[in-house]
Image (cartoon, rainbow, N blue to C red):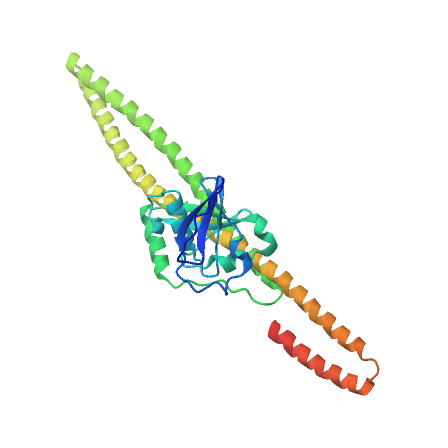
Length: 326
C-alpha cells in the first residue's frame, strides 16, 4: 500500500510520488504558514528524471527551486552536489533554465491551461572549461527578470522580432560556409599527406640505390634536385598545416558562437509566446471594460441630461483607465 511519512514539527513538507509510495523529503523553513497557503499547494509538479516522469507534491508559495533539487537528491541518493544540478522548464519544445532561488509556485500556476504542455527536467550542469567560466561569470551578474508590456503588440513589434531572426539565420549561413571551407582544407591536407608519403618512399629508394650501386654524375645532380624539391614540399606542407590549425580554431569559436545564438533564438521564441499569451489576456479584459461601459449607458434611459453628463464623465474616466492599463 501507499505510505505517507509526515513531519510532526513542520506543517508542510515536500513529497515525491514514485512507483506507488510517498517519501518524506526536505522540510520548509517556515512553521506558521498554514493560513496563508491555498488548496492548490498540493497540486503535483511534473519532474522528468532520466526520461521517467515523477510528481512532486506539497509545493507552497515559499518553495524554491533549490528545495526541489534537495528533495530529488535525497529521494534518489544522488551524490552530485546541488550546485551541479539545474531544472529546465520545458514548454512544448522550448526549454529555459531556472535559478535555484526562484519561487516555483507562482511560476507553475501562471501557465493555467498550458500546464498539460509544461514539465520540468532535472539536468546536470556541464563542467567543460570555457563554458563553465562563462556560466560562473553570468552568475555574478545581476539577473534581469522578464518584463512583459501590458499592451497588444503592433505590427512594428512583430517586424522587429522577425528582423532579429533574419540576422540569426544569416549568421548560421556564414557559419555553414566556414564549414565548407574547412572540408576543402581537410581534402587538401589529405592530398598533401599522400604526396609526402610518396616522397618519403622515393627517399628510401634513393638511399637503397646509393648503398648498392654506383651512380654517375647525372644521377647525383638529379638526386640533389629531388632533395631540393623535397625541402620545398616540406616547407609548403608546414605552412599549410599552420593555416589548417588556425582555421580549425576559428571553426571551434564559430561553433561556440552558434550555440549561443541558438540559445538566444530559443529564448526569443519563448518570450514571443509569453507576450502573445499576455496580449490575449489584455484583449479580453479590454473587451470586458467596453461591455461594462455599454451596459451602464443602456440601464439609465430615463435621465437624459444627467445621463449625458455621467456618460461624459465615464468616458473621460474610462479613457484614463485604458491609458493607465496600456
